[in-house]
Amino acid sequence: MKKQAKAKIQPNLINWRLYVIVGIIVLVFMGIIARVSFLQIIDSEHLRHQGDMRSLRTTVSQEHRGNIVDRHGIALAVSVPVETVWVDPKIVHDNNGLEDMRRWQALADVLERPLKDILATVKSKTRRFAYLKRQVSPAQANYIKQLKIPGINLKPSSRRYYPTGEVVAHVVGYTNIDDKGQDGIERSFNDWLTGSPVKRKVRKSRDGMVVERLNIVEEGEHANDVVLSIDQRIQAIAYRELKIATEYYRATSGSVVVLDVTTGEILALANTPSFNPNNRRTMASHKLRNRAIADTFEPGSTMKPLAVMTALDFGEYKVDSVIDTSPGWYRIGGSRIKDSHNYGKIDVATIIAKSSNVGVSKLALSVPKQQYLGAFSSLGFGAHTNVSLPSESSGILPDRRRWSDFELATLSFGYGLTVTPLQLARAYSVIANKGKLNPVSILKLDKQPIGTQVIEPAVANAVLQMMEGVTKEGGTATKARIGGYRVAGKTGTAQKAVAGGYGDEYLVSFAGIAPIDNPRLVTVVFINEPQGDKYYGGDVAAPVFAKVTTAALQLLNIAPSKTVVLPVSVASSSNHFGSQGGIK
Image (cartoon, rainbow, N blue to C red; front, side, top):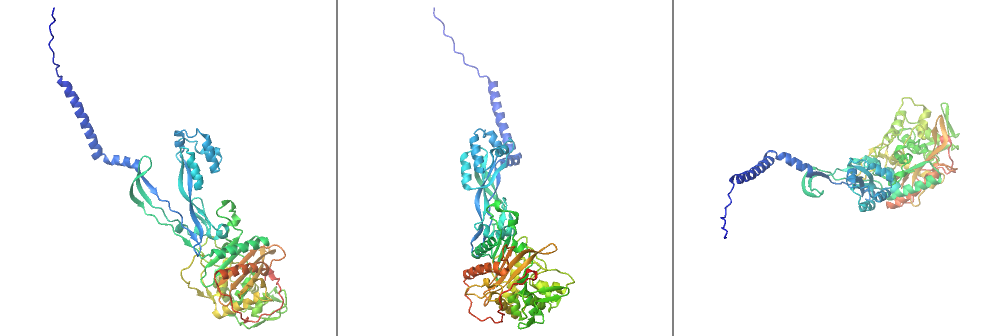
């Protein structure tokens, strides 16, 4: 039986399903268009703000601190690149960074920190920043990179390096770990040396790469260099000779100042003990003090040429006057001033050469009190030199209504007032500079300063010639003589004040000028509390003056002096040392 073929049935289109699907698609697209329109037109600022928060950053350019150089451009302080090691504890924990403790031990070893301290730093899982160590060397930083510890990061930085170390430490000073000046020039000129970095807005990608540089937020200022008046060659010699002398005589401290007579520039300023600013472990408090400007002393007989100069300028005595010092002592009121030897009748030049307390006292008392004290004030005593270094002392020049004759007399040989080595050097520059007082400067000058005439030129020159007798045979400082150059100077050996009077310790000094025929340098040497049998200025301080000044004259190419006869006669009796107040 044959089967009948079935008829093919055509499927019927269900229209409502199509309409539903098309409607849904249209609604979705309309929603997307509406949302996009809302976000792009109505809420665009919010989106832009969210995007900026994720990509916009402000970068700060690294600005190195300016250099400090000497007058010839030799570097005294420079900035060197270093790295700062910091950690993001959250990243450490999120990446299981503490699994391999060998890497952490290696990190602790290179950072020279106990491992337990470093682990305590990263203990918190929510903390995002902590320093591990600052100012590590590039070699250490490279080693830390190779450890590949998650969360450990490096940041470029800089630190101060002082090529000359302890030689010029008290002048240059030092900075702290944040590169801020703490002493010396570093502190006085901190803003000038620092400058300010440029702040720029940039857009960064997700991996931290800069993809777009935008506008500058804040203009920066370049760091500036500081050029000092210091001559590093002379400074090194001054420090070396001072250190040798203080160690040899077992002195507690010492200072040397070398001053350019014509400009008032400080060519050398050295102290012992000193410190190495590159090694903070050597920076004990007693080593940090810049004694040449901070410590004050009774200057002793180094005041005598200044007192003589004042007496010749204002008093009744003249250059060729003869003063009777017999019988070797001088009673003023109830007190007595003594010389160690009865010099009899001597002229003014011999008073200086023999360091006669009696003779200089009589000269000083010939000057009216106000003019006498005013002259010392005009020489800069009792006032800051404004040398642009921190912690400077003004010294003490008493200002009182009543003065006894004995007190005025003792001022003439260095008791009753205190001065710094720099103040004394500035006062001696008046003698060398024909009676003109120049301001002192620790910065190299571009032009000649305008000085103040405080003493008659003829008087200053006469005292300068007289002071040569101190270094001649029969003077108190024959060890200060320099081959080929005529020099002038004065010794000082002052007993140090203690409670109730004066003790057994001495401060010895020598202040000198060279060369006499064309004065260029003033060198002042102070050595505090030398030990042993030799404790006079002529034995301890004068040789330091001779060595430092000889080298300085040669380095400055100053021609030797012509042989001349000393214009003022000086008694040729043998060398003696005074006992009044321990001064000579």
